[in-house]
Structure formats: C-alpha cells, structure tokens
Length: 234
Image (cartoon, rainbow, N blue to C red):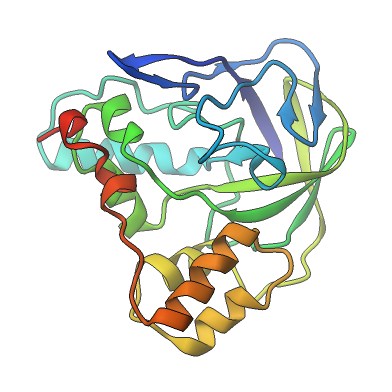
C-alpha cells in the first residue's frame, strides 16, 4: 500500500503549551533513523519519541468517521481540518487499521524496516488541537488511536512510499485488541499476561499490564486524557 510521510517541529499549540503535533507532508526523501524521521521533532520527550516511539501511523480511513462524529453531534468545525497529519502522525494511508495491524508487525518502508511497538495513548493535547474537550476520550473508547513503531533498520524514505508487510509474528494480538485490554474492558488476567509476555510490545505498555496484574487497580487516566485543570475544555 502507498502511504504519505509527514514531519514537523515543535510550536505553541495554545499559550504555554508547546507540541510537535503540527506536521506537514514531506516533499523530499528523508532519513528514517532509530529516533525517527530527520527533521521531525518530539517536544515532550517523556511521553513521545525514543526507540519504541520513533514513528506514529494513523489510518487515513478514520478521518471520514471523525467528520461524521462532529456533524452528528452538531459540533462547530474543528480547529484543525479532518485530514491526514491532523493527529500528528508521521505515516498515513488507506487500507490498514487497528483491527488488522498487529503488535510486532514488521514492514518495509522504502529502505527502512519498521515494527509496530504499541497503540497510541491519546492525550489532552488532542482536545486543544481540535477544540473538543472530550476528543481524547472518544478516541480511546472508539479504538481509533493509531499506533507507534520502532525502526529496526535505518534507511531513506520517499515522500510517497510503499509500506509492505514483511512479518506478522503475533497475529492474535491486533493493535485494537491490545488497546482494548488496557483501556476498554474489565481486568482479565489472561489478556494482561498476553501483553506482559509479548516481547515486541513496548516496555511501557508491558509495565502497565504488570501493574494492573499486581495491584488489581486500573491506571489513572485523568491527567493524560484531560490535562491540567487550567487547560481543560468544556
């Protein structure tokens, strides 16, 4: 399948809040290294970037759904149009969603070899990006989160590049199922063990599974999904 490539730099999202969610379609070949695309920035290094979060894929298939969601609720137009790169992704295409993509999938992207490491965990910055106070929660509940990838082999990628599946070692663990286990279902020890024991899943997500197994209490999502009170939208 053919996909588009996006990159960008940090900028002020709202006063006092910097984000690199603003991405533009690249027009030149870019180096895809273990830290991501050349010229692409992650402003919040604690929650973004690093070897297991070098790239973000968001299915372009979902943008019509978001438009329907906004229209059906009678909401005003979003601050950012529903189009590829709106969710800050580096990669976007049609034909591959969370229901098909699996943790550990290995893909050839130009000269680079990349692997799915975890679902995306939505955060409150999306609410500011689009102007809807509950968008991050809707994304998490609907499973339309996209996913993050690590780079196994570095190489050049073109502005419009082919994404080809090379290996699918864990077909039973789709990105959607992975997200649902932590976000959208009751505590299930067998499912949490499935995450904990998967070597391709990022250490961060495996720790979340381990913590829920050990303590029996779901993680606190409030700050991630809603942000500080001073930045919360109605």
